[in-house]
Structures are given as structure tokens and as C-alpha cells.
Image (cartoon, rainbow, N blue to C red):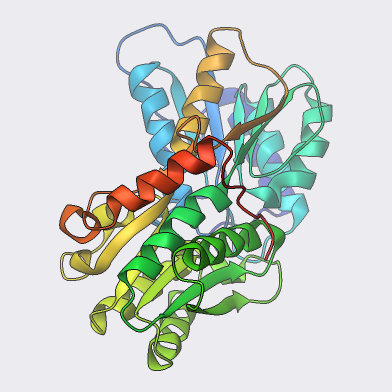
Length: 348
């Protein structure tokens, strides 16, 4: 999806350049910058998922965490983009280049890095790796996991409460178990407040190659179809594809629900009034907390789950006028989930 192809000779040159210079560019966009003035004890590397920086969702949330690392911890950072149609070998090479260049810790954003992190972490046992959305069992890997279904439950309830047609929509990216968690929570939350509500479900890609997360045109088409079938609130869990979903909903003056980042804050001015809320997934917090734990020597391998109880997921209230009439009900449901009175399904 992104620019830059590594051929054998170019990779060799790039590796040498990275090892020598530490912050040379070797694939996609980078920050390669450092905080102002203080002593740098760590160099932090981050590799993006499909969609990359600028998706206004999942990857941008990771980037926000990296920016906090640079500003608050005063550490040197470097971020690398994924490439269009890349193989697992490309991911391995990207992570390996960072490790050989002295970047430690390294964060891999997305489950697509599972095999690559498994392989590269064994090659570099002294490097601390963090991976978002996947469990990798290695002593030097911290798995940063999320209760996406809990946040989705709350926005599903919001959708049902705001719907005037008793029909709402869900647009997924790739049809994979992770995105099914969003679907399951959304549907359960909607059914909780309106057992008779109809939920239209469509995925942008039935495969698992990442294409469903980078196709705004497809997102727009799917959302338009759901609106034509009566949906007046549509939630997406589809990365960059969701830009099209929000565009379609706003054009028809229907509600859109964002994901991961607060998409009310990033929507164009003419679309902003129609972004009801977003299911927040604090990838930014996970990235920052992981790096901070490495910095202060408290990092542990294994899984850490970010959920409603620890504010690792949630829902946005940025569109105050839109959400205020249902917020009390959503907060009541949130408390019931935290207290264990509601168990949110993670599978459709």
C-alpha cells in the first residue's frame, strides 16, 4: 500500500546506512527525531499497520502515543510505514533493520506483525518488542491487547438509542476474528436497548490481506447501500476505509460512529456534526505505557489488556450536543460491564 520496495542490494545498503547513522530512512515515512535538549537513553522504533499514518483511526492513535514518547519522555523516535502488497518477509526486514540500528524498544502496530515479531524477537533477545492486537509468547515481547468489544457495546447502545428507523449498520474492514469482536459488541449493545433493532453487517474484504482497511471508496459504497436499506446510524471498524463511511453518512445527514481514535475531532468541518461518537481504543496509551515501562525498567513480557476498567477503551463525548441525551444510559451500561453485571460477547 505504501511506497518503497526493498530489493536485495538496496536492503544491504539501507542496513549499512541504518547501522551507521541510526536514523536513516529505510521504508516509508519517519519521524527520526528526538526530544529537545536532554540525554537520550533509548531510541524507539514503531512500524505501522496497513493504512499507515494519516488513517485518522488505528495507526494515528499509535502515532499519538509515539508523539507523547518524544515529548514527555524526551526520547528519539522513528516510525516506518507498511508497503502495498508486502509479504511477511518485508515486515521481518523492517523490524530487523530497526533492531540492528539500535532501536529498543520496537512497537509493531497490528496483528499482521505476529509472525514477524515472533521471528525477529528471537534474533534479538536483548531488544524489547511490543505488539498491538496479538499475543506473541516470547520473554522479550509485550502483547498489548484490547477489549474492543466492550467499547463497541457502548456505541452499539448509542446507535440503537439514536436510531429512528430501528435499523443500523456495521462496516468491517477485513473479515477476521479481531474485527468480529467489534461487530459482536456493537450488536449486543444495540440489542440490549432495543431487542427488535435490525443490524446490517458488511465487510469491505472477506479476506485477511489488509485490503479492507485501506479502501474509502468501498466504505462509502457499503455505507450508502446500508442507508438505502434504512440504516440511519453506521459504525465502522475499518481503518482508512471508514473515511468513506463517514463521508457517506454525512452526505445523507445520518449518524456515523468512528473507531479507535476520536473521529469527531479529525472529520472535515462539514462532516463533524454527523459523527455521533467513536469507540475509543487507546493504542496511544498502550504505546506510551509500554515505552515508559522499558524506560523505567519495569517492563514485563506477556499480555496486558486495556479495557473499560482501566480506561483502555471507551466512547467519545466530543460531540456534546449529539451524545448528551444518551450519555447517562451509556455510563450506566459501562458501570454494569465494569462491575461484571454485563458480560459482552467477543464473537458474533
